[in-house]
Image (cartoon, rainbow, N blue to C red; front, side, top):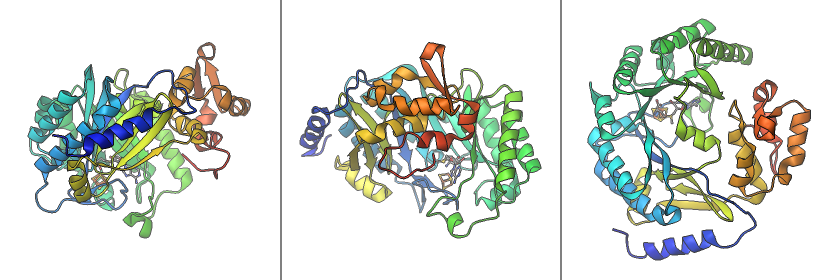
Length: 413
Ligand SMILES: C[S@@+](CC[C@H](N)C(=O)[O-])C[C@H]1O[C@@H](n2cnc3c(N)ncnc32)[C@H](O)[C@@H]1O
Ligand code: SF4
């Protein structure tokens, strides 16, 4: 049930978002749904995601109630739009019971029209489940599992402060493979003390499971993490660059295509949800600290939910899950679009730029021409597709920075 006062607030928000503005979006982009489940067994020292160490029992039922209230309060902003993908991420969503996940998916299906055959991904950590748990997620409606392996090496896992060991990582991938037609393995590279040979061994193990999708992230030292305060010894830039070359070679040899900076997939197994992010699609983000992006005829807005689980539980249940909402400034839209779209190896449809930012093509023509002249991008399909060249992909943050608003300092992406 909607709490008292919430209807009026949502009505005000809707009127606010649909009023006239300077942008002209001819059509609304595809809409995804992200659901954040914020608890983990233990906080990893490199992690800056909104994840919180579980203390005692998870408030599973109360949190699912809050997510439902959050979703209901958001519905008026997306009336009539279909959901193209759902991603249940964290934190460690596999701490939630299969019955809880089934309820969550049921709550979503009852409130939002989902495209037929919609991709529903769940993130799972090794060592957080008993046997057959993955099958139960599948039965609950999850179609794709993303397993956070990080490494198959006991020493590396220890250095990363992970709760699982290599044997549990293998067991989790085996279970995922047995239960799902499509699944992902998350690995990280340039780990503390990692050699090229150790990475090769990790990759070979990952590839021995013939994963339909592999994500391989360069470990970064994020501010506000333990690793930022006490940095471990990491491989130097040259070694990290050799590592990336090795990753590209070995994945390609196994038929996995690098379709985004960190994402490798077999044909037909790309992640629809992440593709929608990179293609500047829309997404509702429910759950503690979740981010959302929603388009209207004349503006694009971003929403953030209350970050602390306790605050989120209290606020979402009262119909006030959103802690912050901002309109993307006209001057920032080109950069925001390019930040994701240029990460795609095959590029993007040029028409999407105008369709999804509401800006005329002329607003970036000069900067596109400059990127063309510097050999960083190319047009294909008679000008219908823009994509980074191999050089542009190597110097991606330089390329992305070319689209920064004139009033901001250069930054990486
Ligand atoms: C949001 S995390 C959640 C997944 C899951 N809880 C886990 O840790 O296995 C998604 C992925 O981001 C990657 N990641 C997290 N922190 C990172 C960092 N500092 N640098 C690079 N990749 C990172 C890891 O590969 C992780 O699997
Ligand atoms: S398990 Fe994943 S989300 Fe949780 S703290 Fe570790 S890296 Fe972050």
